[in-house]
Length: 238
Image (tube, rainbow, N blue to C red):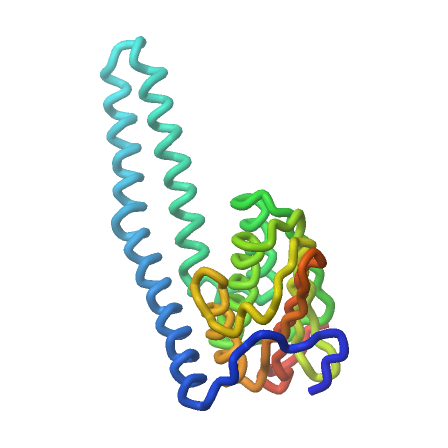
């Protein structure tokens, strides 16, 4: 595949065993996210809801001078419940199987702006429909990893997610106006540089016949492109 505007930078050469291990690690991480989400829902979320109910019952039996304090605690619990629900929504892949890729990324863009105060604009042309559940999850996690790296390292003022189908390929670009970086730093993947997560993404895309391309330089922002053959999908939605 020829990609004129993008160069593949900074990734170490991966042999087949390393690719297999990295892809399997990605699948394990998905399962762990789901388990954490289920635990949050079954224990923390339900306990918070119960605590709020009991606090309401307590408030009805207290004097007026305590009402403001109880109301403040109740509001704090309500905000914590909302934060927990948002985290469950982000971690658990099941809800994403009920929406298409654009809807899932729309949600991610809104969360990015609300949680990190980073303006995130999403632009889509033609979208593949329907995507298999596993493929959509790989694409979603790839974009999410790129957004997280932008938040952690780029010091960007905005980020754009541009997606669609081009010449038989699904292409999703994540572009920021941050400080950029030297791609050679990704040669030794680490959790600090973000290279390890990107290596996992690239391995998982590779198993589907796709790849991850990154172009960046200091002071000039970063452009990342996820590319996946359209043949991996069943049809195309205009």
